[in-house]
Image (cartoon, rainbow, N blue to C red):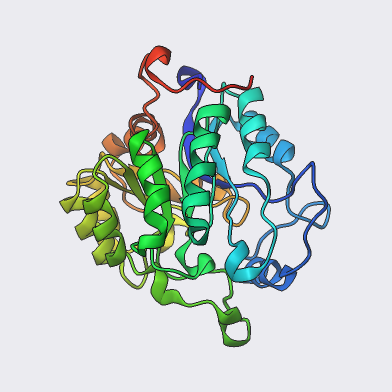
Length: 303
């Protein structure tokens, strides 16, 4: 990443539309419910493709970390290929990093995939969504995947708290919020101290749990995605200004929350000026180890 020329780094951006596979309309009602919940603004009547998303961020000089969400076991919906995201990142390495997503139900086969994506495609982290994937993050079936991530000292992002996915659907679409209670990440962070654990989103209604875990475990961060900052709990802003100022990350949840809105509201809700650069860019640089010499990083086999 050409960090000197980026005004910020968005650490939570979704790959929504594949360019190499036809759309999987199975479970489309989940997308429609989420769009209604978030008030998503759709251009061209659909969510953006990966190239359209990259161009959106390039115009704003904002770096991005992009990933899909693999919830094939729970929803039966085909994921966007991790390799596709990684190839776009290789072609846009000045401002984009690829994370991968692997359903924990894939166990040791998932671990094999994780290793291949890291060593052959230069993937720099992973995304998990306990509610969509239908399991607690500390379920031992996920541990073979975590072992690979920890071996390479990479970050893993975990959805936490309420889920816009399933909100308003009959029975919440069958999705269970209990899987995304942050306290289950405390055990993961303790068992894998070499894996950076990112608790995604303000973790309502369990915000204090997330703050406590982040304060207690050196390898835990919080990303501020999925909510406009004007809706953040006061204690989240308080800790971002003080004890956890080096562990909070700018993140939008694009395209459900757009960075323009997030950044505008961020300026007005009480974040101290001295923490702005930390949250918007510096903490992400540390999380992603972007200052390390290239010779010390895994070199992708593509691009």
